[in-house]
Image (tube, rainbow, N blue to C red; front, side, top):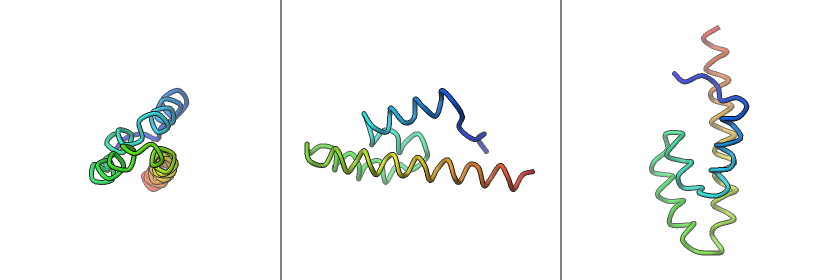
Length: 73
């Protein structure tokens, strides 16, 4: 299992979530959501909801990573 994301890596993932929301889903292991997000991002109006969804998914991913780390000890 991957270590929790920290510092510079977290900042880069956040930038990726804002600029290319669909790609960020692939980096956290959610390819189906990434494809849906890509279709949403294709429209200019859909870019903002796609970015918000991507940032939210990133925060959930970080929470899951912290829980996994806590369970391991």
